[in-house]
Image (cartoon, rainbow, N blue to C red; front, side, top):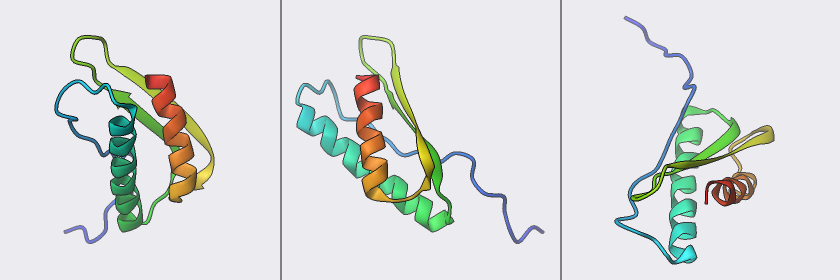
Length: 92
């Protein structure tokens, strides 16, 4: 029996917005809430991330992605929010 486990290589959080989103505030709110959930997982597993990736799956268009490498590994909300905004702009 193994009492310890290897560190996660990937943690992801997300979910459906329930249809087409035309209001940027709704999309931004979804981004912030999922970032909060991601940070909770980073803290729970005692890991930090050096890269943030955001995928947007569109109903009537190909999926898009935005990715930002971070200057250092972190679990800080402010740094990850800045990166998440960049990712969202790339993916949008």
